[in-house]
Image (cartoon, rainbow, N blue to C red; front, side):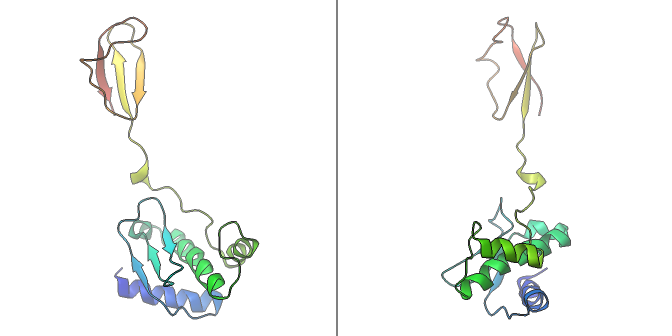
Length: 146
């Protein structure tokens, strides 16, 4: 999907779901990593994460979520996540409250094992096996898997 197709999709979804026009810009932002979309208060444009296009049902919920921010803010109503207006509109129009976690964002784990006592060490960061020893038996540690 290109930015032009996204713009048409958001405009049509706004008319279909809210019966209100979307009159600003909608674009893909490939720098978004942990969120599905963003609404900008200053110029009212919407950014979306292209990675969520794999599941169109989820992507539709994300677009509706951002359109709730957009339409509520332009009407001077509560547009923030904690506002009751926003929560009510999300439930009424079927928007997602949170973007599901992407597989790419799950942390990689490094597994090390002691040669003597077979104790496993799970770490988020790599470690120098020449520098460290087992905390139980002081045996040599080696890299097992990630």
